[in-house]
Image 1 (spheres, rainbow, N blue to C red):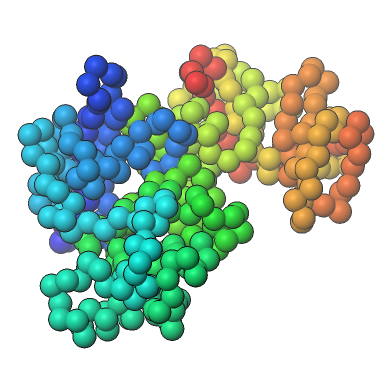
Image 2 (tube, rainbow, N blue to C red):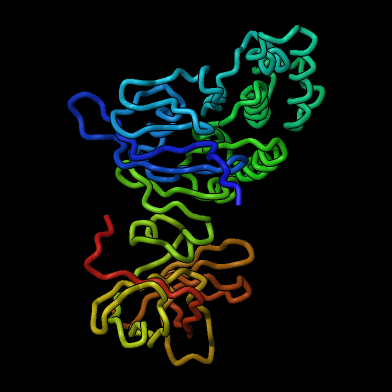
Length: 356
């Protein structure tokens, strides 16, 4: 078996501003060639700082960064972005207003003859879905077109790593999700290794092969979107990713959990001792509407989502749940409905584990 050198390897990075606590500390990740990764987290968690360190825009005060095996950052060494062959797509596009689309894309290809520069730029514009747009200036383009031109410009020099800093935040919701999927397809076709930074979960899940949920300057869990949602490694990840509630319960024998809604069997990997107070993660799709059920809950709030309603339900003891129900089940606020649990992935945490 041949071991492939990672396209990006960051190990135990630390960065801090003078006199302030570290912005990132113990930060590590690894990207395989052609893989798309994402740093996802709330404001202030250090995701953009980590990206800037990887780009060579900030030094590291501990740890090291390697690109295709080459050491590019360690304390006392910071190779500049141009020496790293790193492309960057910024939040505000950073297009040159006095250059048309073709000239913007060709800007970083000064080492090539003019004819080759223009040919490469035209090929990249076609690759991002903008053939024939080469003579338009930034002020003549929509937000989505500007973002595609910025992507084409970053891809033009064939970078060994592409970094995207909140690239779709200036776009409206529908366009943002559609463009996320289109950009992923472009990067995969080009075979480009990329790392995205965002606070938008839908964007992260649409684009990335693996997502790192960040908290307090380090990655809490690096995993697929499916596992982050269904198998969160910590209470913080469970709270941050997706929707859901944490319901109090008690661990029982054989990895079971007793709750006011009944007992759930088999919580693999939970490592809970019988009698231990736990917090059980219930996603909206775990709580199903069932007219025949004796277990009743009151509709407190409802949000129409087209094919579904998201109901906020209150149990007899005052605790609340979320339930995702097909929209033909249209119940009024204040109405009591029957519910049942149908949990495919049982996830629970010791109740003492912090959720901040």
